Image 1 (spheres, rainbow, N blue to C red):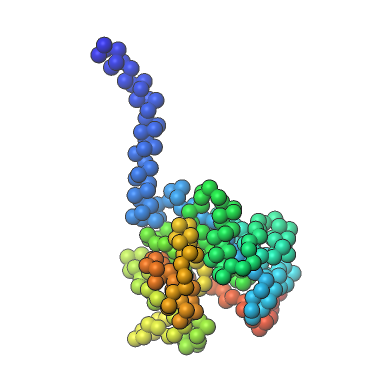
Image 2 (cartoon, rainbow, N blue to C red; image 1 turned 90 degrees about the vertical axis):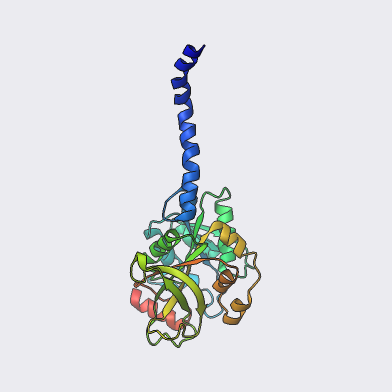
Length: 287
């Protein structure tokens, strides 16, 4: 019997080898994903979602504000598409925004009108777009960045892949004029010098005050976020935290909940459109 069994072994191994290989690779891939987010696996596929609502308090209807012949939200969508990172969707509570994006050849999805934040809107949209969970990383861009360089989503994606983090965001060097402005949020960051001079790091705090003290370098926070999907699912269930309420900064809720925020530095940025003056200025630049 030993002879026939020995003769069958190569055939049995040939049949089982693909399954053995899969079993060997899956734990290895998962381990690499946990220890080093830069290893690409099926678990870190990226999707971009741009939340947009019409009821902005300082500039109502701004997603549809005309800039050089196009609505503002279309400018943002086009720049996100140009980054070529993953599928791009607009999440909104207004059918007029859906119509604009659809007419441009894009994808927009209706969400509830009563979301307390853009993060909640983004999560609802992702759950509807991708109910099977194929996308594990969500890039939440802002709908009021019509001059957004494609480097913004690219850097945000890199920050997600840089280290083991729940979410990621971006900063740029604050100008002397910005340091004292409360509307310019400052980030306290410890930088990983192994990856270049102030290229990637970890955020410890965000404030409207000029912090940290004792340094000439203050970091202006750019309000775009990359999320691990499970982290975003957890975040939107958390109540507002004391520091979040004090500073009026949503990202402090994540820090108080013990989430790790990865940071990447960018030099090429674009300001958001929050006021009629901002809108007039961007119209002049893009005309």
